Structure formats: structure tokens, C-alpha cells
Image 1 (tube, rainbow over the protein chains, first blue to last red):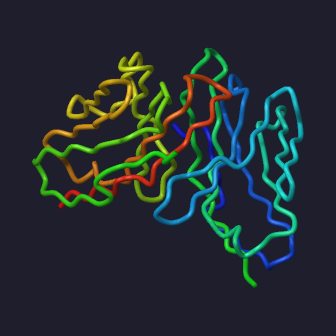
Image 2 (image 1 turned 45 degrees about the horizontal axis):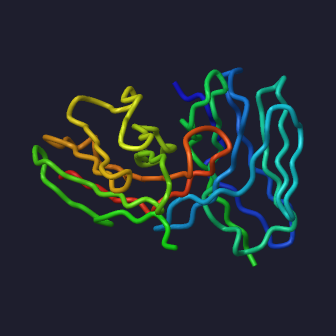
Image 3 (image 1 turned 180 degrees about the horizontal axis):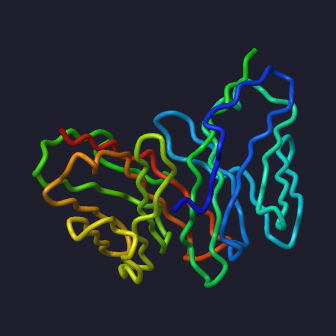
Length: 114
Length: 115
């Protein structure tokens, strides 16, 4: 049972435009969410996070939005750059305990065209 | 210092053979995690270590999988009698401490192919 879902396997945008990556989750106990970015042949690297007490967190060109009632979060990249081309994973922590166990989505491959 | 390293980077083995995957975490990181990513799927949590102890082994797919950590440093993931469904990228991560808000730093992974 996939508790964190990224329903779009891929996304292609033009350089300079906005990229929006979506993520849905099913477990209401999740209370901390992260986005990771992964280049080929490298491990995922942390990008941005958001706590369930917030609905928005911004870091430079990257903004994550959280809609708890819809159990949905999204990552906005503005403006998109060719170097942003990578696989993006949404991940969540189960808040029922102080657990470090991350639940990941399937990933979305972003291609930013020059 | 150096990041998380894993070896080998690629491993091709025959069905039924045993394999051992190695992870060297960032020095000083007390928590260590193993994940795997099968083709087209997300990262699947396998096991974590706090120090040398693994409190939760429920993520291991079967009793053919085992892991250990020594000296609060190197960890090995062993898969016995490999099956084709074990083919995946196995990722190791470490963090300064265990729990939420402790960023996990990932290694590049070991790509395991079982023929």
C-alpha cells in the first residue's frame, strides 16, 4: 500500500517557467514532509521540508505548499533552470513516534528544457 | 569530510548466491539507514541502526535479508540466496542522530542485478 504517491512519473517544462511537482499521502499521522532531489548515479539530496503546522515554506526558488485537509503537497520551482533536471522524491515522517523512518513516493522526473 | 560511501557501486550475481553490500556513513553519524529502490518505484525503507543496534527490522523483505553495524560505523547488508526480485538499487543513509529533523545524507547506492 503506497502511503505517499507521486502520480506524475515525469514533467517537462521550459527554462524560466514554473515547475510544479505534486505529492499525495494517505496517512494522517504524517506530520513532517520533505522533498529530495536525485541526479543519476548519485544518492538523493535533501531539498526542502515543511512541518504540518505550516502551509508554506520557501527557500530561494523552491517553495513547498501543504494542504493538510486534502493530504496534498506540492513543490514549486520558479524560475526553472536546466540544472534542476533530476528526479524529485516526496517523503514523509510518521509522527506517531520519534521515528526516523522516511516513507518515499515513487519520484517524478523533471526535465527543464533550455 | 567525505560523504556516505557505498561499495560496490554495481553488483551482478546469479540467482541463489549470497551478496554483501557495504556502507560507510559520515564520521560521527550515529544513525544509519538502508533503503532500496526497485525499478519504477520509490525508496523502500529496510532497516535502521541507532549506534550498533537495529531496533526495527520489520522493513526487511524476508529472512534472507540481514544487516549489521559495527563500531558505530560501517554497516553491511547481506542478502542470502538472492532472487531476481532482489534486483534494485540499495541506498544507505546516515544522520547525526535518529529521528525527525535529523537530515539523512544518502550514499550513491549499490545497483544489484540478480540474473
